Image 1 (tube, rainbow, N blue to C red):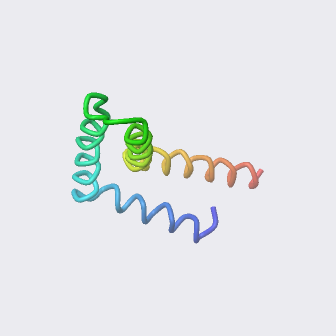
Image 2: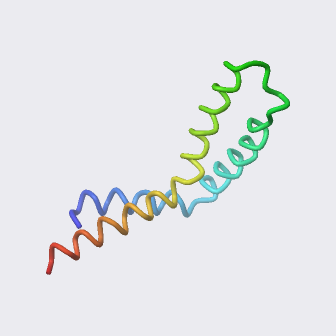
Image 3: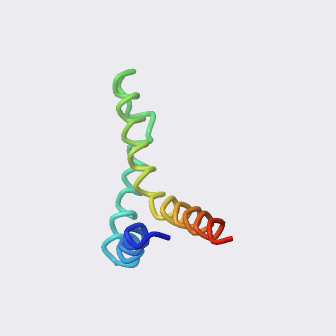
Length: 83
């Protein structure tokens, strides 16, 4: 794997180990439960807005797993090139 790409993944690994990241994800998870309430939706525009919020929150909550999968794919690609 290229050094710049490896550094990119290492920086994320460092981030994911912090208590601050864990708290950040926990807060967004709680927020998602509130935003996902259909009862609080006032109209179609609000529903679409909430859907957008949930998409962004899901991206944040699942970032660690997405980075892990991306790293594994990059490592597999690098190993395939070595053959």
